[in-house]
Length: 248
Length: 313
Image: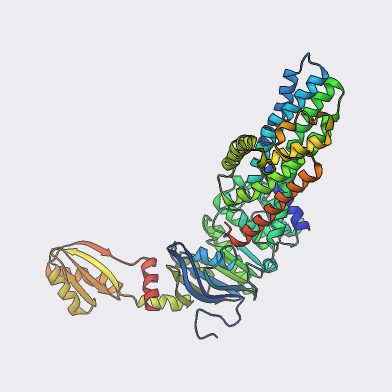
């Protein structure tokens, strides 16, 4: 257990160097700043709608995926590129243990950054109107979406150096283009799982987000189950890749 | 004593008919040998397959065919065996943002070894890196990184130590110190394999050598036996002269060369005695009043020597 903890701790530090962390945190503040810039002199009801729409279309659909993809793709990908994977692989550690430590580091790192954006946006609304109802939905929704992205992009990061580019194409072309046109594919869109969770936890505001979740139900259970499925497939495929591929 | 010098009596590592190919390229071909306690030099020219073999032994690369076992276990399935094995790779498999001390401690933690400050300091002290232990590895020279990697291997206290070109980038003092360290580990009963493309380097550190070229076993045994095998090789030398036929005939008559083939401006001779050829050629040229304008050994490189050994085997 101490081995996995050591691997987790070092992986987390490697994933979040100071400059990158600062940049990603600043990116997380963008939705809150947009909200503050556009909500002046508006009514509380309109501002709630605005907050949810910015949360859905800027935070969930852009900022959160970018952060999650970058961090998840790098957690094993950077070890492979830097040829340090052999340093880890030559230890009395099962490939499953390596995968779990890496996935846990990616989820922790990405969620820690993503939570900043969720809290900032919900806090901006709370400070202006004394309404805290967005907070829990944004934070839990962020966790669900982060888990799903990590499940997809940790193994992809191990497979190819182009995983971030592929991730951006997945986000912009598939999730924000194709799924928007074909709502039946919504369960393949991690950020929509997060938004669905938000909607289920924030029923008063859900109406403003419902158009963006495609054919997904606003259900915590179903969204969490789907995210866990993404993670399980990610763990299985990463473990298999570590077992079968030559390790640099 | 094993009859075949490629094998040892009490092996800790067994390589059995192992091949590894990448598409059309064969990196290691049907190679069988074994390693036991003591220092063994894994010798061969660059690209011979030494690194691929070491990586297969370490379980990082899977063989396309054949088997590798370490302490009776398959390193690609039984990860517990890595409590007893450490590899120092040729490439910079280090974290540039970590200090040397943190890197060595991390190696110990991952290996379930003693990661106490004393254990880490001892390992760093073994490679004379204690004074630089709190600097980040990114600022180290190549030699310092090599020594830090060795410290990260030593902290595990491995029964088996695999070293891929470990002396690269080290200065003569560090080199002597590391060679002494590896010999001491070998004498203490550890299995130490050191890969190198430099015969003199291997000769200084190990008594047993396994030589490979083009992925095949070229020779195995003591350094002396391999040197003796090398002396048996006919060397080819091209000599430029204005009287090639006369000089070639004179050389053949004196027995300095095994054969000689002349063109209009040069002769190509085969000899097993390069020293005599070097001393006799000017004398014969003087007697014949021939002018010597060039002397070009054709295949004296280590690589061609190894190729010869492969063909002979």
